[in-house]
Length: 523
Image (cartoon, rainbow, N blue to C red; front, side, top):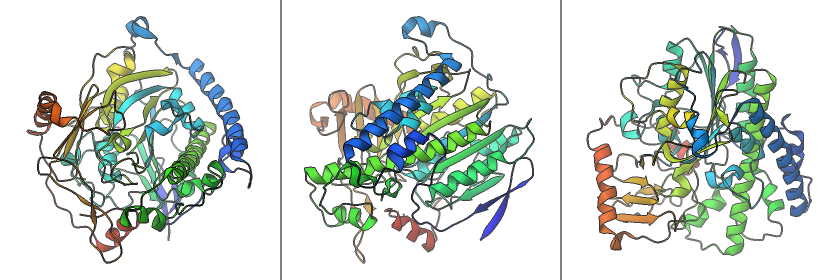
């Protein structure tokens, strides 16, 4: 069924609502060299040739990023650069805002975060490199709905009430679209996931149910529609991205890892079998799993580039603050034989890419090493725009880091929650604590047909030294009681007195099935 959605100008833009089904990456006019190299490789081309072409495209897009950086502010270097701080509160008053979130995108699989196995992200690297990159940004839950609700509200999941996939935004919850709409913004959201979350505050809304090509086209059509040039806009685009079963990679994985003869492939039933049948993956399987995921990241990068390139050609990125983030990462068999994300409490799923760019306003190529949280995005955007914040925020503005990327001190702890349970994580400096006081083993992996969900083992206490064990393989809790106690106290201090929006939400059976088809167990 077609329906027409209002543009900020009051004009109408056509948007479809479609059922969730696979769609391969659509042809993109952005970065033709990148299209040829990584998005539509020549069938049968050797992996080495694909990599060589991709590296050439990476160099071309990196050059564009360098030009963008020269057009903007120079990044400060060291303490001397940090001393020349620019006051940014209200400096973007009246600017447009584009929020691009990409599902299931691990920070450590992007070139700008150091990934070197293959060039997965030249377009995103260019966009992130044109602004300020946060090296240690953390999601508040490794699940799409709670995580994105935290980004849009500045609250932990217990505070905004969207504690699980399938929960909707409460009617009285202040969110970014509501706050900016009140400030005179036109608002449009075009999503490929999280369709039925009681979204509010949007003049135009469309959800394609997993079809990223359509999401990008509809977002560009809305942004390009004639409107009042004096009225700023907020555009949120959420791509299905690298979400399993990784279909945004098409058949590229076969070229990245030629000759694989195992059972893995971009089909959900093949991936589910690894967990439901407790399959042990060997080195060849793991190499192909990496290729499947990287192929999906490459496809997502191209789609993101198509969106940003289209906005740029339409002149919609002038005087525009662009926020790029992910909702969570992906386990990829790193812990307990688990492939996906919603069960996880580990860095593979909680550490996410985050960057802000604004031409001529924010420094290009700057890095912020301190830990930050997705709940910090809303207060940061509001402070830059000079828009008053809501009465309650759990997050804090990152403008101090944007003003002085080389300063800012040691930073703050970063936390995550886990549904309505008492499971929390905290990262402070190089230490990470997983606190599970009720010894809960969540039933979060759909079981075989007709069988109950499988449980994900989480110990009562897990302590990791991320500086020496970034993969979180050695639980040090038994020999570090003092460190455990200090981190547990941080969790108690953070959450003991925060208001908890307790509102059990019944999930319709149709939505339960959709979530189950995506690999989730609805509460």
